Length: 263
Length: 246
Image 1 (cartoon, each protein chain N blue to C red):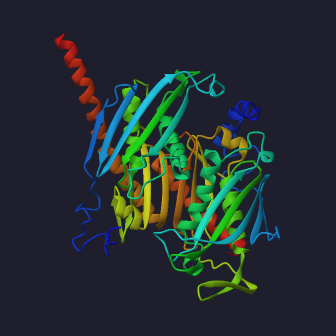
Image 2 (cartoon, helix red, strand yellow):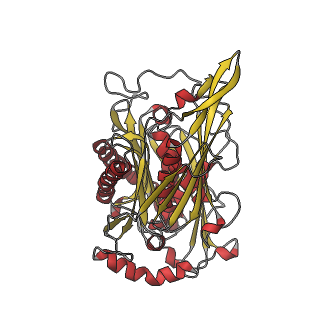
Image 3 (cartoon, rainbow over the protein chains, first blue to last red):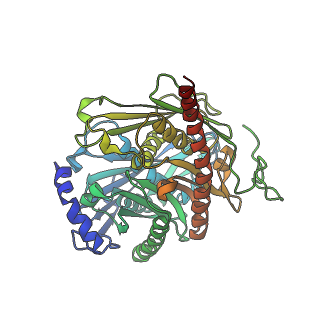
């Protein structure tokens, strides 16, 4: 089993990190190589594929008409779902969503929702009755660690790639016109995940690192450079100073990536 | 539904329930409230009413989950259908699934897991009435229930949220502040180890505001920690006195 091998490697991984190095040769604050493609699934309203090292994620978006929530009658609805597809890892099983896939979906959701990335007010067709529902489906195709950052990146990239039908409302009837308009977006959150090993913080943990880390901390950074979502995971802890260290790393890394992506 | 208040903080700098920004709601903790459980605790914080029960270490079910070198911690955070304004379906929601996971991960670093190989410890948290900050109050109660069950721990885990309402960083958000505020930062920690074992956030905060919120939440945790220790003493000092009389 993969986890047994990794537990044998635990000491090696920890000693390397103690000396500022990592198994794959990266520095502590280096990301693996990131590749991003958009518009790869023609049937989807929007799509993107992200490779983060060997971690591979495909996100597809779909837009349907539906009912708004009663507490936000004038706003469209965002629904994020994540599938840990069994072909992606020997550890994944087919079946209903487990807590890992629910957590992944909810972290991706939180970054998009709390940064107000989607201009949901523009997705209202008929207040209280009809709105557009944006479905974001995260598909994990190969799991080699840090699913969160790869999924969040692919999700926002897919939303930026999303087209919706032109429509007009006549006597309460929605008529679809020809042509498409882009999904109205207001923000482009970028998440940065760090793992803790003793008193060291590393960025973008690989699967081997994730299996032996103390804990992880993810922060989503919006266009203004502010923090819009956080999630700690794993059965360990951070000191307050380490939390602030992660916040600083997240701010810098998000800025760097935003510049590269031109978001 | 009630009318939305225009301002969450009045001209005097006081909140909807009259608290100052850095003031906790009244916290009441009681240990040993469920006779059947190995350990249990009850918490009231504002209008929150939450029960936590611990069973174990006991036989692992299903058996294949057993670990050879340590115990398995399970956690279920659940809200009663009547705990909120509109009835909540008793089936676990995605929110409850996520919270069960992060609560478990906030308690695990406190427990000496390696003391009980091939066993399981169950933590059940039932929210009877919700008033904002239920995950935090639930953690505070669950840590007490674990201690009450006699499970060796590095420290108690205590939790409290801070956040931003209007333009002010405040401690221990109540329901309205949670829903209408700008940001919510729940924090769980082991005060003696200076260790944060749960940290989440939603909303929007600058880095300065975030640091301020975390520091405020840590202060709040330390205040509740004192109440937690008193609650444990209240049960066990009482028992010791009874034994002495016999």
